[in-house]
Image (cartoon, rainbow, N blue to C red; front, top):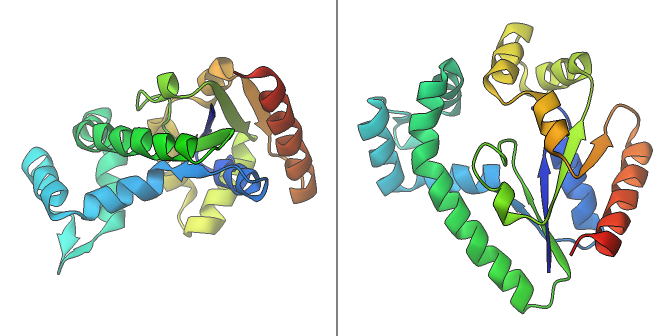
Length: 198
């Protein structure tokens, strides 16, 4: 079974590419969604508070903006949180892949904004990086999350640079045109992967 990694900086459109792969019949593991589920567990929320000294829950509800602000404030903060969450996400991902393979899947994919940084590159056979111009990325995130340009830039600057991700890619999918164009590019890359990536 071929394992495909999908990554890209915030606002590049990696989730849209993941959706397009799903529509082609490729199961996709969403690391961000899994991480959110992990954070909601009582044991993890307690560990987070011990490590960070912060309580990100109010009346049992995760305060996502507080956690995001803490994460993006410094590399040290991000490392504290990620050192707890990433190993658990990788463990769950490995189990998920085994299930996909035993069910006869020819290919599966994993989507993560920080796939490389989280040490998951070794867990995929090939890496797709979704790319888009910086200005377009900023506009997309501002519209999607209803946040200021400064906040978007802080998030972008806290992540691995897009140019470094592109340099490490096996395949780059530009996402700077319309939906039909993105679908065509994604389909072409998937076909290429299925022929060449073993």
